[in-house]
Length: 585
Image 1 (tube, helix red, strand yellow):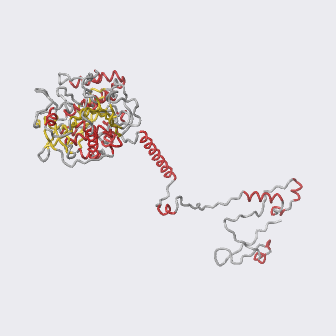
Image 2 (tube, helix red, strand yellow):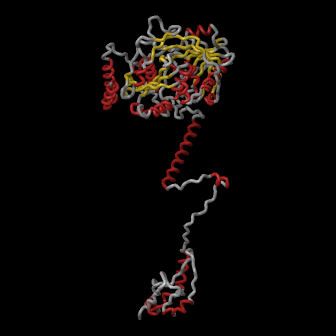
Image 3 (cartoon, one colour):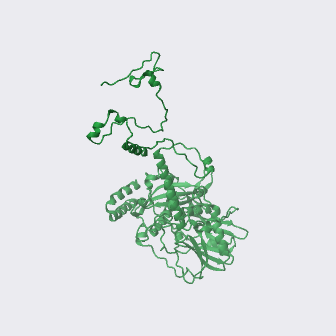
């Protein structure tokens, strides 16, 4: 039996089949083909089977009985079950995206902005950034709740911190002021301050230090022959004279006023003695007070060790920073004998005694019709103005003790990323920088110079190098660190008003060591006078005096630094020697 291929139609008029194609003979020719019905269908319709050669009849008998046309027969029970199973597994594939319904009502649909389609990795990255922002927001919220909504309060501060002065049982607490009340205060001093008297003498600033960089660092010198005075308010003979002349109602120093103005930024405990005598107020500090030392990493998140024997403890670093600040303020001056003298000599230096280059400006501010303040303000140097006048400068130094603790290496970052170094210092020493800025504003300084001083070796706290010096205008720097002058004077005005309501006597204002608040205690009149004995500094905290031989000073300092580094760090001694030689070069 042969297989009928059929007739292949030929179209002599063009491409494609002819309009009336002949039907195969097996279908009965052209007449039969015209009678075959045609039903159009869409792509979503299910098509059945025409023939199935995969079926196997059960057994040889069934195979013999199966006819040649059985592949086209689907009337059996098994075929019906198979067709039903096939119908149940049929799924319509629709490529249309599901309709999106607005999540927040009609307004959300009109407010949304058209966005370009994002790739898969961009969507994942966007979700990751949103998750990080949410986690950071929750962490900030948690820290704020722990710190009682105090922006500068360190959440991990030890609860065992001691107050700066021992609270005696016979003291009576008169006021308790949380820091949240201070942040809301504002008071503007309309009148410009008046200079009542200028004392002392200052030297000119050496502009060569503006060109110092980490590659050409200057070794920090020691000025043991010059005396630095930290005299409190009531021990100042000039302030006593001004009080007798009834020049003001409130008397203080710039350091004490700066501590009050920057109270919300402080972490460590400190105290100020307030004496009410008649209608006058005197703000004093105790001998050996915390206000005489410069804090280091006070507002940093990581706490410094409390062991005083450690050179990186809070107390040891405060002593080191104070010595660095004093020596830096004298080294950056032109020591050629030319000085600018004021109306009166230094009121604290005796005859024949060499005093440090400091000028005292006794200035008066009028707060209202009844209250005026006189403060002793300090300027450290003078600079020649291009216009022919003179500019007053304040000189302060930031110190680096261990780059591994701070996370920023000054020797690598100061030349390329000065802003990052300053931002780190603003985070770790916000209170100290704010106090320096307040003192510069109170003194009416035209420029404040900040020096960056680092250890020659991280384990050597005796020898240091000046890496660079930067200058800032006080008002511009105050705006940069978000220091509001109206809030500064508002804090002072509120404390003065509170103390003016007290009776005559002695009081002490103490910053709580564990909470963002200050307390005012009423104390006996003889407190802090007879029971205080100043303890000498331990040997490891005392600065070694320089050698008499000036030429051999640097060599001896290098030898001492190398020996101490070898004893303490072992293998790190070679790095200390290289760092010392680089600093000398």
